[in-house]
Amino acid sequence: MRVILFSSQTYDRESFLGEPLPAGLELQFQPARLNLDTVALAEHHEVVCAFINDDLSAPVLEQLAKGGTRLIALRSAGYNHVDLPAAQRLGLSIMRVPAYSPHAVAEHAVALILALNRRLHRAYNRTRDGDFSLHGLTGFDLVGKTVGVVGTGQIGATFAKIMAGFGCQLLAYDPFPNPQVQGLGARYVSLPELLAQAQIISLHCPLTADSKHLINARSLAQMQPGAMLINTGRGGLVDTPALIEALKVGQLGYLGLDVYEEEAQLFFEDRSDLPLQDDVLARLLTFPNVIITAHQAFLTREALAAIAGTTLANIAAWADGRPQNLVEG
Image (cartoon, rainbow, N blue to C red; front, side):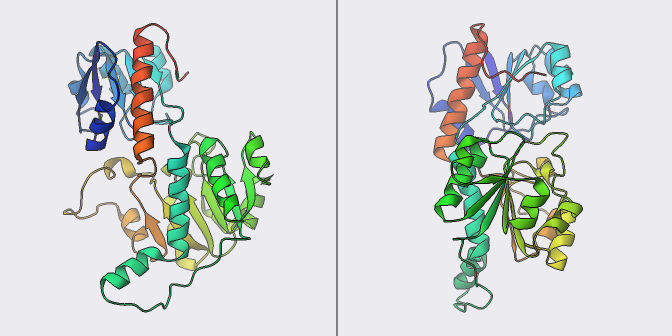
């Protein structure tokens, strides 16, 4: 059975080839992003293995189905980029990796907090240039600070546990309270209450129609002046232009992003020799109190191995007629 992996990087090849390959599977690694221009590459492949920025809209799914594809095996937990009604209409099965390493993403969120707080990005650049002054590098103690966790699934719960270890007070917002998070002493409150009380806010919820632009001009105005916002979830959770205005007036004091709403045409590629065409992202990068990473929170050896292992197991189970980790439309 032929499997094509779109948007595959060197680390994908290494992680998939490092796992036991189920009998009968033939892997083809394709660095191109899946879209209408590249969908022809999937012809005669029963399985398409897609990543978060691949285009799985109805027109692409229709072409995949015509070319013989029967299964879309996602290398991600999120599936907001899949047109599920179209997949169901076309008879395409969708499988995902529901969990790989919540520690990877949670620890990256904490890394952004520490780097922003202690201005590590600025200090690094200074000392590289022989500037050993400390002006403008003052941070704050994390102990005793109130941290708001938006979304308390596996990643949010792991993040909460780490921040509790720093001695932080925890507030949480989620329609489905997690007993593990409550066991850390967290209080579940409404989103406006969380925004008003937390000095640090970290987003760990899925992107849905209800959560799109959860953070916008109105919610930013509800935050404490100078608050820190971290997003390692999905770019669409945040109205990015509204962030710029909040940063300009100081309402938002720190911003750490690992995701960006318009990242599909930018991330996972070396574009250092090209002018940055995205004016919103270019403006964000001018702020000294902003750190943006290119969707690398998942990128640990352990997470990559788990993603590869689960994806291959999903494909093998589907081929054996016992599908697992199906995404229902």
